[in-house]
Amino acid sequence: MISIIICSANPQDLLLVKENIAQTIGVAYEIIAFDNSQASKGICELYNQGAREAKFDLLCFMHEDIEMKTADWGKQVIGTFASNPTLGLLGVAGGGYKSVVPSSWYNADLEVNGAFYCNLIQGFKYSGREAFWDYRNPKNEKVSYVASIDGCWMVTHKNIALEKPFDQNLLQHFHAYDIDFSLSVGRDYDVAVTYEVLLSHFSEGDFSEKWEEEILKVHQKWSHILPVNVDGLDEQTLLRYERRAFKRFFEKQLEKGRSYGYLMKICWNARHSRIFKNLKWYKMFVDLRRVATLRRKAHN
Image 1: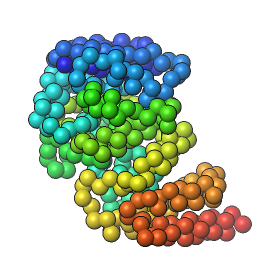
Image 2 (image 1 turned 135 degrees about the vertical axis):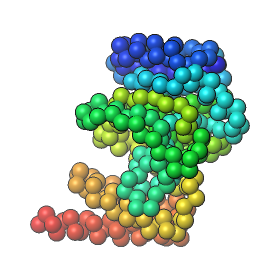
Image 3 (image 1 turned 30 degrees about the horizontal axis):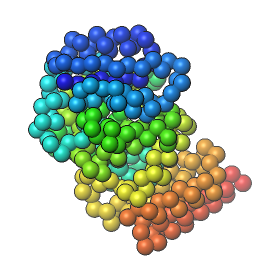
Image 4 (image 1 turned 180 degrees about the horizontal axis):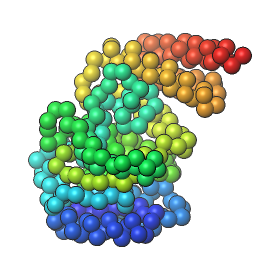
């Protein structure tokens, strides 16, 4: 039995996904849908309200621009949680390493990185690219444990959602809630990607300035536990590549008009990370100064 919680911005999309769920879920369910077409509340606040109202033990937080492809996917989800008693959060896409450098759940700028785990049909509402089946199962597993997951479709237990609610005070819009929730749940439970449920997600991520602001809030909040290294990468090696990724991050941020002082605060915040302990974080200040100096010379 599953409670499905949706923050809706489009009545037609909501109607279609309701019909699709009815045809595919295969178990008893309820849908708790909030009309948020005016964006009057943030997604974290509405997800928390839905968790409180839900009557079933398993909660599925999902976007409305989704079409479930797997028949009886509800039975599959219930079975996955029953077979994995330490599982706290399940998704269809995630990364095995959550970096110190600000990023989504997967940081493409890291030259040495955790694996990309994924099973969904990805659409492109904004760019117009052709949809494709994005299947990445590097360990040939039914379930792969990860550091964080994508928020298009997430399942957890009700007691976990109540114990570790979405941070509606920190995140009052529609971004970064999935990473924040993953990191929160991952402190005490396993976070995983399933390959036994397939869905189509009709839109890609919107990496706007607001998204970036929310991501930076999450990184500041969780700097003391980052990186989350579920894939067990060598952290001495990662230190070098995190620094390189930070340099690219600084370059991009300065190009966007971020101030030197603002980026210094991000360096200072990263000192909480275990891989930047013993003044290793100071090297990032040196990197930032070099990047800023080169940029200033290039524009003179």
